[in-house]
View: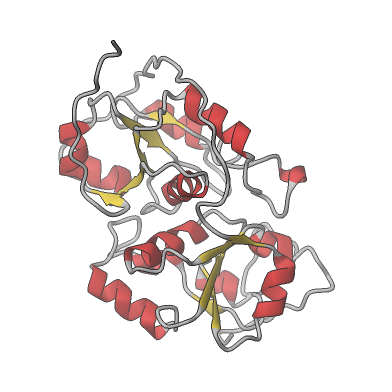
Length: 293
C-alpha cells in the first residue's frame, strides 16, 4: 500500500505568515519557492545563490513562470499547461502539495506563481506574507544549500481556473461603466513620466492607477489589514463593479492586485495577459498620460 502523507493544517486564504512556515517548512507536502526576479539589474538566481529560505527552490519569471516571449502577447505570456506541469514536476510538486512562494518585493513576483497555480487548477498556491524580509526579521537563517528534490510525476493541468482577456476585450470594455480596469504599475509609469522597458509611456485610457505597492504596509512589507484593503479597492470602484480587469507591465505584478482582490471576495477579477507591454506596442491603440483615467 502507498505510504500516507502526514496531515497538514493550513490556514485559509492565499497568505501564510512566517511562524506557520517556520513550523511547517520541512513537511513533505510543503514546497517553498523563491520567486525573486528583477526588471533590470540583478538576477533572481544570483540572489537565491547568496542566501534563501532553507529548503527553497528557485523559479524564474522568464524561464519558468512564462511562455516564450515570442509565443504570446506581451513580455511574459502565460506558459502552456504542459510546460508549467513540467516545471512543477521538476521541483517535486504533487496534487496535494502546498506551494509557498516568496520574494523580496512584498509578494509582487510570488503572486504570479500563486495566480498560475489557480489558473491551472492547483489549489495549493500560497504567498509568504512579508516575504524574505519578514523571514529574516523574525531571526530565521538563510541557506546557500540547493536542495536535492526528487521530481514528481507531471500533473494533467488545464487552464481555466482564472479568467484571462486579450487587448481586443480590454479595448471593448474600457468604456463600459460597469467595468473597472486597474493598472498595478507604479504611478510614474501610469502617468507616463517614465517607461523603462515598454514601447511607449502612459496607460490604457479609462484605467485607474492601483499600484501593487499600495497593497502593502511598507515597501516590500506585509499586506495591509483587510479593512484597509477593502477601503482601497472600494474607493477604486473594484468591489462593486460587475467586471474587474487588472494589468501591469507584462502580467506579473498585476497578480498582486488580483491576490488582494481575491482576499476581498473578488476572485473573479481578470488578468489582461499581455498588459501594457502588449498594448503599448500596438500603435493603433490609444494611450493616456497624467494622473486621471
